[in-house]
Length: 330
Ligand code: ATP
Ligand code: SF4
Ligand code: MG
Image 1 (cartoon, rainbow, N blue to C red):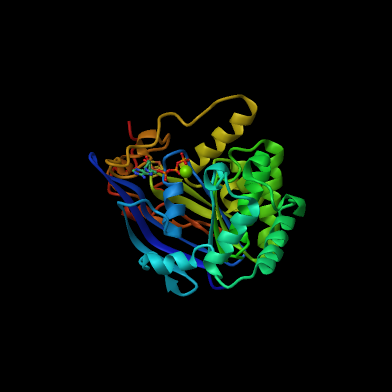
Image 2: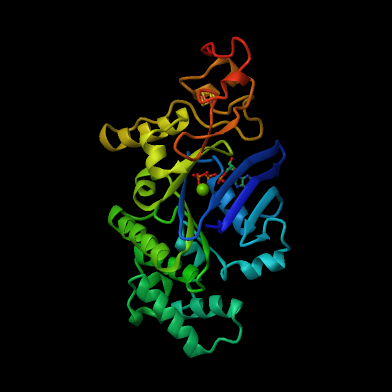
């Protein structure tokens, strides 16, 4: 059906004394109702910047360009006031560190009250309580904890609390930025289960940012692989993971698998400086398959066989590679 979110050529950059950090540099994707898109990639490739950009939560001084369509409205260029109204109500965000987002002096009940009243000023205490208890119940938090303070919860419970707070307003689109990174494996599995239930029950669309490829395999319909500010490959999780076409996707999957069995095996080298990224394909200095063309021309974005998209000269279009361009790059 109609996508809930359509991002078109989204760009975000931060001004610094060294020059502009192009953290997101031309990203496009669609997300259908109830669909979960996993966003993976190494540290510093722009995942959080993209997630915050979609929510209108960028720090002062960050610049952005492109379009984000949400239910027929363009929200990237929206006034802060209108964006604020949408946020929470229609758009939700779940952050990595729950403690920094919860006020230690406020009871859980106060957090719910504040959040609901921002978007529904006339809500009565009873109505707020009913909605909050329902959200807590869905997160497996007993109603007896409604008057507790944040520090009285375990890390996993606090994270579920954050999810409950983000979801009490029933947003249609939620960005979850590494919601499980700080948690142990059991709690992590539980959160993934909860996120899965949510989309089934409420048709919430989710952008799930994570370092954990295993979580993507378990909880996501589609995956987008980000490198140096661009989505280099995206498609259905089964297609992309069983048949990665971009060397970065392949290396990322390989390093994750060996991480679990034989210890550390990261992709050699590191992601580029986004103030001055390499010419051509940004992955070329680290790519085991790099060809001459890769050092000079940015690859064209193509449809993947079996759906999705990929940008890599190995895939094509071969007629656009200049003579000699397929020589291995030394
Ligand atoms: P991680 O996996 O470590 O969370 P990420 O993929 O979320 O990384 P971002 O946090 O989006 O990456 O950062 C992308 C780039 O933008 C990095 O080079 C980072 O240093 C830079 N950056 C992020 N936030 C700011 C900021 N407020 N001001 C300046 N530069 C920033
Ligand atoms: Fe490697 Fe070239 Fe493909 Fe980039 S375009 S990933 S350098 S083969
Ligand atoms: Mg991040």
